[in-house]
Amino acid sequence: MPVDARAEDLMRELAPKVLGALVRRYGHFDVCEDAVQLALLAAVKQWPADGIPSNPHGWLHIVATRRLIDQLRTDSARRERENLVLASSPPDAFANGPADESSGGTIDDTLQLLFLCCHPALSPPTQLALTLRAVGGLTTAEIARAFFVPEATMAQRISRAKATIVASDSRFETPADDEYQGRLAVVVQVLYLMFNEGYTATGGTELMRPDLSNEAIRLIRVVSGLRPATGEVSGLLALMLLTDARRSARTAADGSLIPLAEQDRSLWDQASIAEGVEIITAALASTRLGPYQLQAAIAAVHDEAPSSMDTDWPQICALYELLERVAPNPMATLNHAVAVAMARGARAGLVMLEPLDDDPRIADHHRLPAVRAHLLELAGDIDGARMNYRLAARRTLSLPERRHLELRAARLT
Amino acid sequence: MKYMLIIYGNEMVWESLPPDQLSTLIRETDALWTELRRTGEFIGAYGLADQSAAKMVHTNGDGVPAVTDGPFIEAKEYIGSFAIIDVDTEARAYEIAAANPSSRLVGVEVRPVMHEAGEEM
Image (tube, rainbow over all chains, first blue to last red):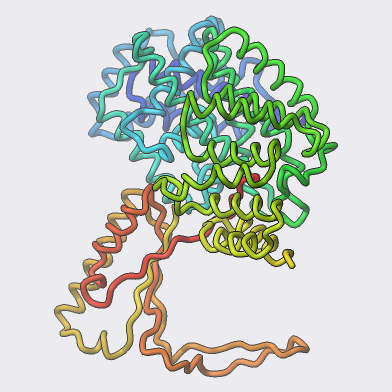
């Protein structure tokens, strides 16, 4: 691996540990976060030129601590805080790095940082942006690029998010057991959102930087290593791996979407599939069933099938039935209808769609006519299919999806 | 979600405004964009030059461009300015449109901006 890539991986891995340690020692999440960003920028400049230091963790910690002091000093209005920091620093804090600090505490620091960034007072997109910066170690410019907004806009969002957290007086500690599961559920949701942001983005010919899907997989791996992983954390890790395995097959060279049934399955990443299958098999056998696990199990059945025709559709139907019982939602019903159509015929699938026309959560969503069009096409109703593809194309806000749906409609003659 | 806010108008609308109302309109619009910069919802806002400065570019079959005055369509109103915002909800987009002072005068059109993400189907 070239020095630049290795340095980047190291920085991403160390950033939350250094930030966690600073926040634990000094408090002031907002000021510490700025300090760690400055230390990362210094590392970006120096490491590729001078080589990676022998103790990169200690290096980042020392530089970040100095920046923290600098920042407090330059702002006279914050004089009080400076005194506080200096008072709570042991005299040798700046002479020696934390090189010998055991890594035992730092892992929990990462989780606590995730809890802070996924603070309930923040909106999900803001939780996502802050997580990418504070835990993922991404720069504001990279995050802004990933969300297609100007850097100034993203900078403002992040600084407001930090102010919100500081104002809510959140303490840097692991929540009590009853609260822990609830907060963990939010973290898991944010990582799922992060993954989808990366996975659904095609970005035309230009590959998206940074790669949000890889970052989400990396972070969910960290979370799953923190405690005895809960079933849903394992389930989400497996779901991400099993979905990401299909990535290079799901878009054509021109950026257009290729549906699952038409993908070149030889392009699927077999190592990711094997790992995902192993994780989900273990989770299903030993933990309480949840929606991420069931979605992962469905993805596993798809990924192990040699073709769409040779897919175990009855098994997928059974898993969707379970999913609708555990976590009823109309999107699952839609996918369930496709599976039923494949197992028992298009008409059976179409019947399942009928109640969705009266469900306000999905009645106006483009996916309903898109699925209906597909099933009508299978049933041989060409006019009905064309009309529904066009309706779906008018409703979607996604350009690649609109092109895909328009093409489907145009192909029907 | 990104939305474009579009304000249509014509000379008659703008020239009919008394100077103090016009300056209030400009001041309130500027204040709204400043507020959106602060909230991190602002992507950009642009006023367009008078429609008499508009040109039409047509290329013929050989790819030769022709630039003419225009568009000279019989439209009663033209796009006077537009802004792009990035907000959490549709309701917030309407709220911002309503806070724009032009909503009192000519109305503000709110259009979702399409994105490049696509779900596997």
